[in-house]
Length: 294
Image (cartoon, rainbow, N blue to C red; front, side):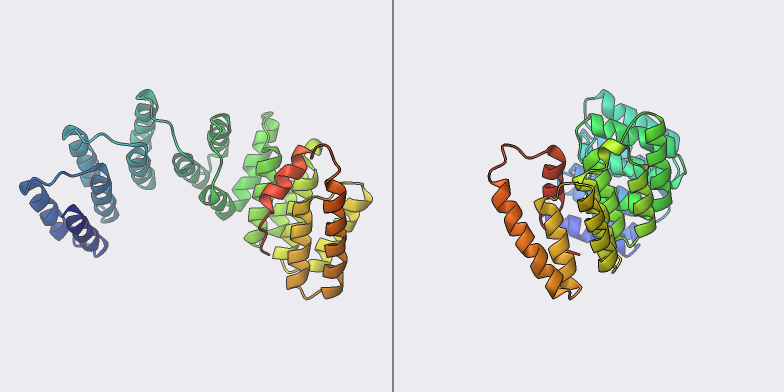
């Protein structure tokens, strides 16, 4: 029964028929149907989308008054509503409340915060949130990376601010951001991010990420040239590197080169079987580019 009502709520809400949505909600209450946090959040979303932010705030207060305890999903959704509508003080108070009662932010919570801060030009504060995310061992998902990409020039500012403040993206996040920028067809910015990394983080994983950028940009010759330069500098090639090369060259129609590096890859795997351990940067490279698709 509740699924029928919630479906009707969403149908009316999406159509902008807020009065009809409120009527259905009233019927739910009159019929004694228990309203859960997800239903309240849905109502808040549609009410705020109609321009009635105060109405969404009242719905949040009603939810808590009726003993429906908010979850991290509820807090994050309401936080986004407040920030999207420039209710910054209320959003700050809400976040503090969430932390005080022991609810840990998720990746999506951090993403909502960073999205607002980056769009507001508050790069230093976004950097602090990113640092807290790292300290909490919360890994960024695709949405978090996409936000950085959408605000790509802000990313470079954030990275520079992090380095100046003594923080660092780290090998994993550095390679990930570079690769994501490549997917977004931002090769120039990806190169700037790469060049901003500390020397100790220019390794197999970040080099491979930069090679992938050229394949994404439709420049296989540049990708191959960069790979050869790295080889001459004795930077080790990981399985993930060959995944990038073989996929990129294959899609570029370079059959001869693809065959050459396929043979190299086989030799690497044979040689790798006798190695006692694999360096961390190569493990990261293999993790990031195991299923690479150019």
